[in-house]
Length: 83
Image 1 (cartoon, helix red, strand yellow):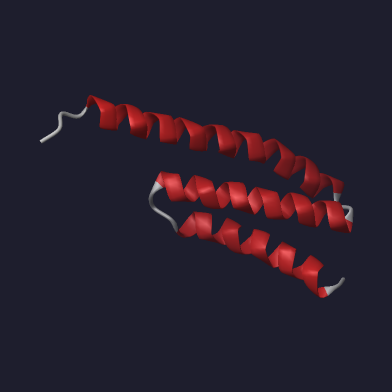
Image 2: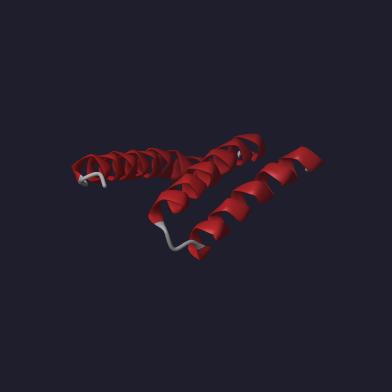
């Protein structure tokens, strides 16, 4: 494999490991979405159908949860009284 293929794979792995390190959900979901995107690209390049299928299933789940968190955070900020 060439340098760029390996780099894409390592970026996906790095973001996946980062998700296990995080404590807050919002940055965790951002890292998970980035991990999915890099792994989808990597799987397409190397021709790994199982990895491609798994990441294409996980991407909309993580993206939906990320949008939920952002919506919930906005709702909480609206509901809080201003000082």
